[in-house]
Image 1 (cartoon, one colour):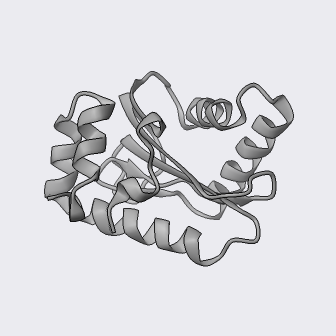
Image 2 (cartoon, rainbow, N blue to C red):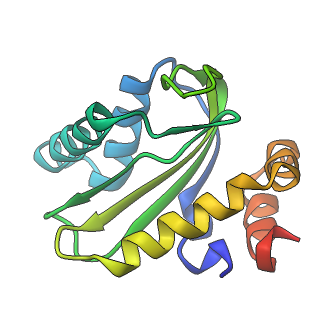
Length: 151
């Protein structure tokens, strides 16, 4: 499955300037909620709730924060390439600079897992991750993600 099947070009952000996981979640919630403070707070709450279960930092400088939330009607994915890496309490202790955020409707089961599985498979390939880190803008990243298995 190509990652662009669920990551739109305008959902790929480069050089995102945040200094902590907390501020990253604020940035993400503002992106998704479009200035709706109540919705933004709910997104932050759900992402933090998931983090309390265990870090979504998966190692090698990558995190996949994800949650189900009742205020959205379809799965949304955001990719962020951070200007500076932030601490995500990842198992390998590496700070995170590549972030895939998944928000899914509360009643959604299979799509959420399929998206999470596809991203997880992609980031396990160190060559793909190194290529992704070298790309400079959203369009280059989108084109890379449009290739089957990132080839």
